[in-house]
Image (tube, rainbow over all chains, first blue to last red; front, side):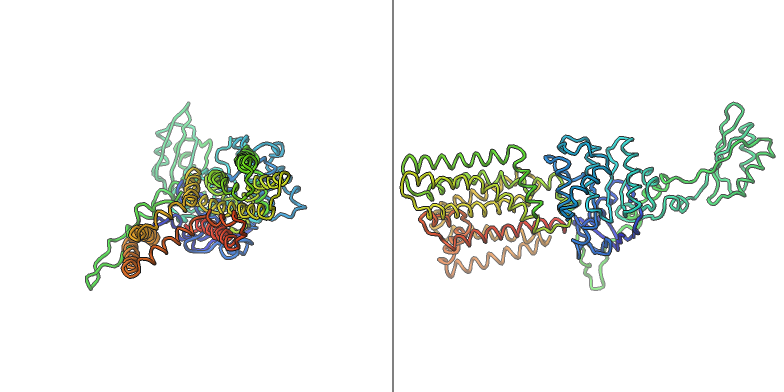
Length: 344
Length: 287
């Protein structure tokens, strides 16, 4: 279980994450979605205790990450964007090192390392030096390391980046499997991945949470239109004219092909069976037989683009300070030019 | 901590680094031993050790540079800082591994007095006392190297700064004689230090005014001191330089004095810089 309350993180005068609050209940897979620079990695770094929060609290399995760091970290498995691997060690050596770091009792270490390697299908690389592994295998080793100690919470930062399609599918299946017993937060900017794997989606933009919900909920929430794809037998012009005047129809596109017309009808949001029936009857009345009718809901991609296009910072530009009654301006701290962004 | 110790030790000896460093150091030590003690029949092993201390100027930077700077560069510090391991454990684990690596050539050189014994009468207590002081000197130097390595991501910068600091320390007796000349020079150097302090204060508080105030305040204090008691200034300066000279307390070991103050000095330096190294790691979280 992860609880984040009013998390804010600043790098100098730049705010990377602003007033972020969310909860991930146990056993759920939560996706952090956002364009590059939205603050996903910063959020994850704060969640794992690598960075501290400028304001706010993070509670992992009931332990505050800053006040009870040891207990909280024991319940955390972290796979950063670049897995922290030591190139000069072999896979088995590295995993055994991580197991020792994570306080796995000596008697269980070998067993847990073996199980983790089998889980990520990297057992045949056990004695290979990490510097000789391919990117896909390095990700797997990183994930295996995150699994050691059987932590309750798994935090994965862009886990499938750089993998080939087959590996990506395997990885996602693995994450779904893990999600049954662990609480998982994964970040991604691949929408299909998030909608395929996650139970809950958080959309971040410019450091702020702009939407939250299941992939379907989000699509529903933000739909301002529904689209009907209709295939009719008949002339394009007649079909289009028949539908055009109907209630709730915004736009009609017609394309004719071999005597059949493909219509794309954009209706107002909340179009239900009544509208579909009206469209179908209107077409029948005009002499066009309906062969196929399909509703097209708003995809997560459209939701994403819609939500991340607008910049919350542009909504309210800061007003210039005005002089007080006594003629003096309030003290304004100018943002330091050189301090922008994370330090190297 | 033990996990980190084991890993660091294995890592240093996984490639050629550990072996070549230890071999080179033993080579230098044995060379001086051969020339001073065996060829020229000098009975003092302590003096031989003192002559080899320059080798530490190269050994320590190379040894310590990869401890923290490399971790930061390769982002493996993310693993250490998100594991249920405290910062003191991390620092101590790394430090002890490096001390262990340093102990290897020192232990080999420890065989030298026994060789001398075969050919004459040698005070083993004096020789091994000197060896112990020598080892402590190295441990203090390694702590300084660890701290400096944690300040940057750039391994070359870390190595060079460790080398620079140790070199300055090494040349400190010479520098000290330069500065006993006049209190004006001492004033100048202290003035520079005041400027540095002002700069640091200004950067930390992000306010030019505060930095300037600190600088002016210190200058005022220095001016008063110079006007009223310039001798105090020179002696204070001398004392400051003396404290920075890492290699001078070892000299008492050469004369056969097992100097407890020197032992304490080395232990304190090591403790101080280990503490600062830990603070450096913690600071990264809050930045």
